[in-house]
Length: 272
Image (cartoon, rainbow, N blue to C red; front, side, top):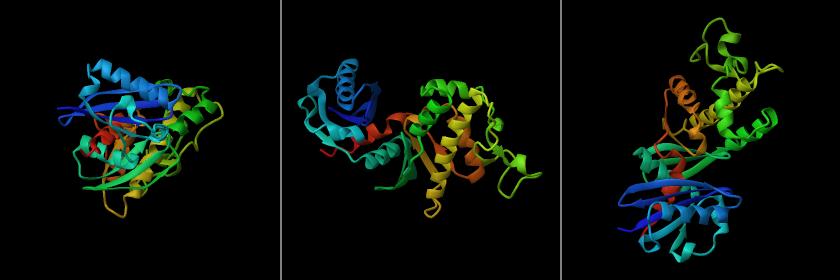
């Protein structure tokens, strides 16, 4: 059986996967200075690493903002384009095995897609995401290296940055425990440590995305939220989202290939 290649082309980062006989083959991520270099570099490396010949590829499916720059067949192979939000939904559905959910793509900003069986539709988003984290980190921490920011945050104390319910009330408020956030960054002091600032920035982004997602699902009653995109790799996701689960009685899911769900969805969108 031939392989369908799904490629999520960003401005400087490309993610590529193969789907063969219903299985995801060796997801790969490549960075480059522009989308075309990134795409062709990723594609060539992917074929080489997985010992796939051009004749073994049935179809190439492109998606992502950088795919608009690609208007001809990749290496002469049959090439199509997948709508990004549909790819988000199809990839998250494949990875999570859920049929009804909100798909939250945490990239430079954040988009939210509602999946109800085969009904996949983009319902909105917010301009807060990885771009917010790196931009504010450049200003406040003098770095935009996400790995460095996450490492700094591991030694941070969020009570030095955020105002908690326990700081303003002698007892829990209805539905709000003492350690719930009352106001982001409201407790920050001018001499806050880099570690505390890093943790505050990460928590601000993750909590804002989580809250927006929960609010987006109020009318439809969906309580399963599948998180995809680069920010799912932040180690702080492992405790920020569980805290929100307890507070709001919802379920945040980060699937195995969360970073590559859009590329997976692009491959799955191919119809022979």
